[in-house]
Every structure is written in C-alpha cells, then in structure tokens.
Image (cartoon, rainbow, N blue to C red; front, side, top):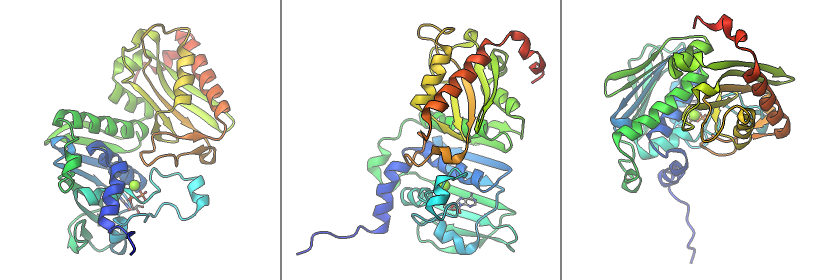
Length: 335
Ligand code: ADP
Ligand code: MG
C-alpha cells in the first residue's frame, strides 16, 4: 500500500511560511519590497499591535491587473523573472514568487489593487480567493491581519508588542535608507512615527540616523571598475557599544555579510579600539551578475563572484575616507 501522498497547497504554503514569515517584521519586509518593486513614489505603512494584529501597506505603484490578482497569491508565481538568465541579473528585491502565498497561508490577507489604466480597483480575499470590485485611486493596498491566527504553535513564539514593533521599525528603516527617492510613512496604533519626504541620500540618512551621526561621519565615495561605494561612516568619536547602527546595502539590498563586515572592521582596526563599534550607512553597487542574491529566502546574505576584489575595494575605500582631513567635510555642513 502506498504511504506517500502529496500535501495540500495550504499546508505546503504554511510550511514554506516557516522560512519566509518569521515574525511581523518579515511580513513587512516582503510587502514593502513588493511596493518598492512596483515603482512606487510613496508608500504608507500602518501597523497595529506590533504588526501582529495588522500590517497594511498602501503604495502608488503600477498595481496588479484583475487577471493577475489570484496568481499573485500563488506559490512560485512572479512577474519579476522568467528565466535563469533573469535570475542571474535580477534587479528587483523579490523574484521567488513565494512571499504572498506564504503570508496568505498564515494570516488573514487581502490585496486591493488598481492597475494603471484600469477603470476601477479589485480586491481579492486571500482565504477563498474571491474577487470583488473595490474603490482605490491608484496602486495597491496589502492588508495582513491576525498573523498566525491559524497556526497557534507559531503564534507562541511572538514576542511582546513593543519588541515586534521594534523589529518592524528596523525593517522600515532599512528600506527607507536604501530608497530616499520614495516618500515613506510609518504609523503604529494610529500614531505616525516616521514621515519621510523624498530626499537626497544624505538628507534621508540624517533623518533616520540623526544629525549627530552625520556631523561625526566621513562621506565615502569611491569607484573602481564596476564597483562603487558611497555613504557615511562614523569617526571614532561617534563609536557605539553595540552594532545597532550598521547598515550595509548591496545593490539596494540590506545585507549582513561576513566578508563586508570584516573589510569594515579592518578599515577601523587602527582607529577604533576595544569593544567599540563604528556606525555606518554604506551602499555598494556592482554589476548584478557579480553577486548572487539567491542564497536564502530571507535574502540577508549574498555571495560575491569575486569576493577578494570586493573585500579589497571596500577596505581601501573606507580606509581612505576615514583618513581624509577634516577639511574635506566642509562642503557638507548644511544637511
Ligand atoms: P515576488 O515579489 O518574488 O515576485 P510575491 O509573492 O512577493 O513574489 O509577489 C507576487 C507578485 O505579485 C509579484 O511578482 C508582483 O507581480 C505582484 N505584486 C505583489 N505586490 C505588489 C504591489 N504592491 N504592486 C504591484 N504588484 C505587486
Ligand atoms: Mg515579493
């Protein structure tokens, strides 16, 4: 007698959700990144009870056609890549087509969207996949309520409202740092905590990291072949007791990468001693073909094709920036 059977779709998605949806902040990451990928100019986030009760993200991006709404909730369905070639040079934040399916399997999810040029919006219910006409001027509203309502074992691992909100806030800050060209707003339990207009990269960094950081940081601007490093790195006077103010982005993606962290530490080795940590916001850009972002669904790690060259470049660029005379900062006082 056969003992092997195929799992039902919902259960498959709930299992997959274990990797993608660790907590409210991971839902926020996926939904925010979708809004970014949709070419939005403005994004508004509303959270309730640390994101556990509700995460609602409204954008003014390209929207989703009525015919595509059900597909958006399907596993392995995406508009972002179509071939291995695309995967190797992917320029969007998402590409797996997994997130919405996973989220809809563990929370009460709906998507309301008006595709550019559509007569009106449509709303799809993540539970029964029913479609109904809806009112929305433009873009997409993704509403994720009651996270883990149907998976009590997961719900037990949620922390306090304050802790979950702090994780959501951190996720929001990463996206906001990477995309100063997008206006972003975050509200928690009806109170707005960030209202960020479109800004220059430097002004966005100042808004999120504080003027004090900017005043005690060196501007980094280096280029070598296809590699480019920009951003701000703190001088020793601004060093911290923890690593809480370290942001490294690779092609717009926040990463925590051993190789990059090592290169940074090494650049600070001679000027920062003991248990102190630098603060920085650094943006590395390179040819998408030179970096593999397909390491893990949470996508916080990357792999470089030429890791030696990247390490050397980051180390030298930072070392040079940190060694520059204070006079180089003069033009930058009026942030
Ligand atoms: P991925 O982002 O990897 O493609 P998702 O499950 O996150 O997978 O989303 C599935 C698809 O739904 C996307 O490829 C995109 O076409 C569409 N989509 C999701 N969110 C939005 C949005 N805010 N605006 C426009 N399209 C969206
Ligand atoms: Mg996505």
